[in-house]
Image (cartoon, rainbow, N blue to C red; front, side, top):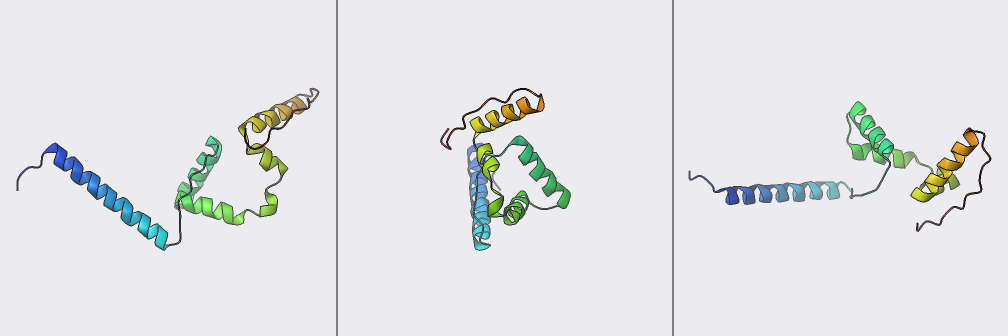
Length: 114
């Protein structure tokens, strides 16, 4: 058997990877699953990864379980405020002021688009 040139070997590897990803996507779609990309805090990511590892499940299963358990009524004003990085910083500063016994300053919260 003739030895493949590096370029041909690389092309073969890329093609196998593409086919593998295509089959994986088809399997997940057949199971009724879709992709979801979200930004979370480092702490939330570490916690989810730790739970997945401890229980021997995929990260997606941990996220699915958490979302299934979340009651839509649990998403309150604080959760809404924490969804904005600028408002999170203001909320943390206000909490710090309160914790240190300082006078709390009135802080303007920004709308979602910040």
